[in-house]
Length: 207
Image (cartoon, helix red, strand yellow):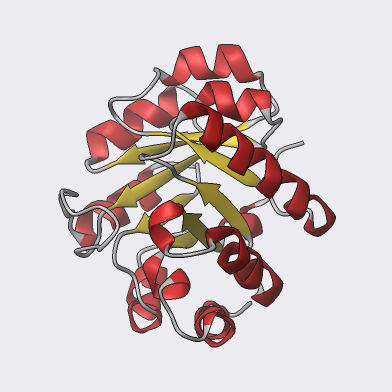
């Protein structure tokens, strides 16, 4: 059964680049109230990525919070994650759906309205729209305008998740565009007080 839109509200993106002991930080954020977790690993070997994903999946099970694997449909399948998030150069969405089946969540990155419309037509479950602002986790990410995000939200029925350098102060503007949630990494995991950082996002999101 696919989750309702609430689960996309505060979407944590985590990786080894989040600093020492990333699993501890992730679970601190989960305890504090993030609603979804994506594991994104660009520097780990496939074996290490698998082991970390499996460990995180087991830790998340009591919370009933979806675990999404970035890029790697094979690892998502192997650890029985809740889904996969695909970029423009990753496995085609249709192929990922064939591998994972109809009940898994498949998200797609989109930086243009055309890309978002194509992903929605191919059956994605949500769009990661961005990057809205410059971000420390993806230095080469191209930014998109708020107008583009607003068009995505108004024209597509799938949830639109804003991503890229987002802080709590940005939330009122982003909510006015019609988004369903925000994806956050360094603003939470890079904080000295993860609990307070999550609380600030939850408060402004009305959670």
